[in-house]
Image (cartoon, rainbow, N blue to C red; front, side):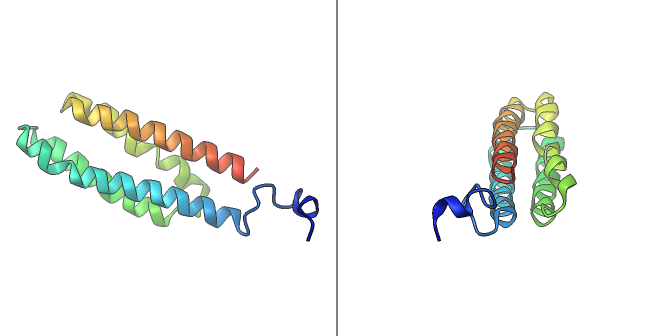
Length: 119
């Protein structure tokens, strides 16, 4: 099969672009959840308020649940809640806001990749 013959149908060159993008998004969300869970002990050592720990635990669960829901269009945009809530929770501890900004940049990149691949 010539490369130019497959061009208009699959510009990304992937066999199943939606599945590939879902896998990348799920990987990003799983990484966010893992980083959040690993952040609990340092926040306890830094005497962060208990509300900060609760926010992290809830957001980790939300990220894991959203991993399985990425086949739905709305889940891609619902995942923006994780970094948004972290940024807002920055008033509890500044580390949460920093983490929220990093996660927001990661998710913005994932949305860009999704848009580019599924074009």
